[in-house]
Length: 211
Image (cartoon, rainbow, N blue to C red; front, side, top):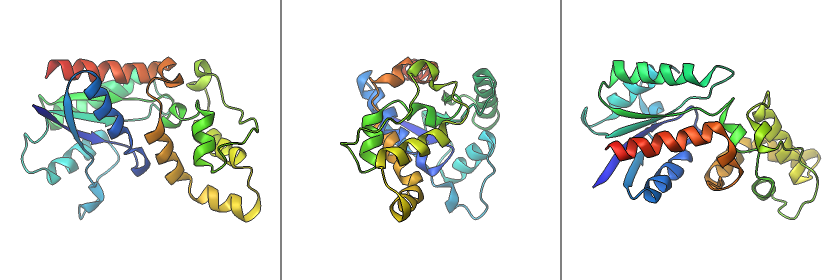
């Protein structure tokens, strides 16, 4: 049986996590179809809270029981991960009681998962053979970086070795390049050393086992 999952993310460049959700499910012997709803289709755009997004997703669903599982991405943004877990659990219990859920809580933000692979960064920067140091942290420090988004932007710029107009064009494509990096994320690479990634994988595997 193919499970039906809803994935609610923070931004459009986070949608690539759906491919990892599907791949992890296959690794555990389950087949899953992940839907990422376009909440902007609604006449009234939803708020940013988990509850708001869940209610909006229900408006786009064909029926209340359309999904077996919901995966919800919420950056910790400096908050304790448990606070985000509780926030997600409370929202699901309020809006979709009984629906299995998996929290995805990168620390401090999802970019912390993307600053560990210099090869991938050089690839999206268009300079795969570059040798310039990118100043990336070791895995045990990635979740302590104060602003991983800024660090990722800087690393892509360094990796490109572009200047002037070329650099400006590259920086204008940051969201696109970030989305590519998420799709390219090596699930068996350095990210496996991050507690937030481990929690995501463990929670997803446990949820799949329970269904």
